[in-house]
Length: 284
Image: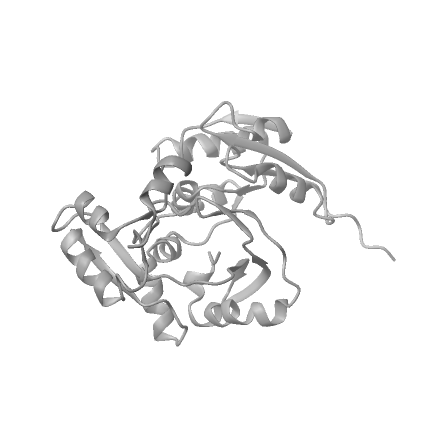
């Protein structure tokens, strides 16, 4: 006897102007389980999602104090069952308002606000991973150019390149490689603006000598890159995908290949889920 079909759902997808929206919408429609009606929203009225979703609405940006109220009203008007956020700003705002949506019978697909803040702080994550025996790159936490120069030298600069990024951030924003051998003429004449590579002296010149935003200086790992994206709950990885990162643009992967050896590749994130479920509920 066949099981009865699962009821259709109405899903609100945020930040549908972000890269990968068309592929995400296509994958959601091909879920193989049930019919989905997809409503997209974005701060920009020109977002690509307006062309691929069933309906589109313009909303305030995720960092706006009006965002959650506007989204909740939109969900009520559109009879939304679940909200799938796609922007880091949207994720934290919705996590903080998750109880309001739950009271209206709407599921928001985010972890707790505490877990998201922890996962967004790279230094805190590195400390937690090291405590449970997970290997991390060598790293230093710094403020200002003076501490940056000292940390870079401790990590091997100028014998080897290191990398630099804000302690809190998403989407590779602020990521730079510090490389004494960078070809400045090649950068000037042939590379796109905002090259990711510069010399330590240039970074030190830009930063205040003391203080300023908290940064991480890290060992620069080489070789092929692999990434695991997944959904976890209750300390277990429920769904995961392991991929290579074949082609990058501004540190964002524009071409990946799915890896077949999932059992081996998912062992590490599954172990972290068991040890730090609050962090890995938003593993990516």
